[in-house]
Length: 239
Ligand SMILES: Nc1ncnc2c1ncn2[C@@H]1O[C@H](COP(=O)(O)OP(=O)(O)O)[C@@H](O)[C@H]1O
Ligand SMILES: [Mg+2]
Image (cartoon, rainbow, N blue to C red; front, top):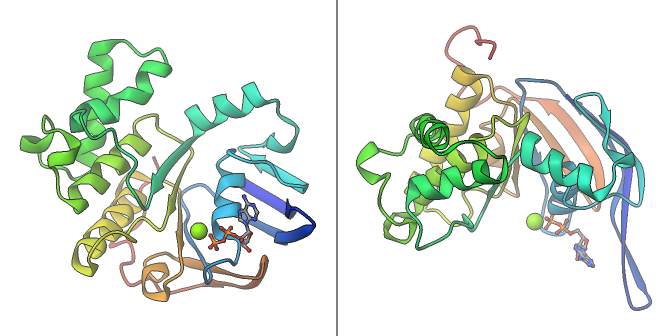
């Protein structure tokens, strides 16, 4: 599904060059639930931006679903972002004055989906993300932090992306709410077969995944299968 090899990313500010990623390689298969862990400044967000086609590497190769992303034009990259990637951010990034269901169906407008179909798919995504139906027509600024993140997760799912990228999705939530959101990712992975890449600086968050890749100073220092705190209960379903 995802294969990156020897990815480097250098930022230059004035005379100073920072190597944010320094030769990163790994594969992620369809249906995997992987965490990228590392301290602040280790290169996690840079990696997420590259995998999410928001930025391109200075060097190295990136294949997504067999396509060579490193050779795509800006237009092709924006199509990949729209059709293949679901983003979840720490700060939710919802439109505050739009309803939950409107926030979720918005990406489908850009994908030219008809209105009725948009609402149907947004409802399906909200159900998958676990937002109670009596909240669907609330403005997103009327929802709690945990509910906002469920809307953001539903928005990430609505295009049936190949992969969901979540950058510190529990960073703005109290630990109990964070736990519920992490269990939501687990449900999406186990029960609906979604491929999930969870980015975090905290070990206990990473331990919800089945594999933890640890970054330090832009390099992978470990890549381990772990016994997840919440493993899939039964044999995984294929989507
Ligand atoms: N746009 C940028 N311009 C210059 N340096 C950057 C930029 N983005 C990130 N960096 C630097 O790259 C390194 C990795 O940053 P980042 O990927 O944001 O790490 P993390 O998400 O793990 O905290 C840091 O040293 C950071 O200061
Ligand atoms: Mg970051």
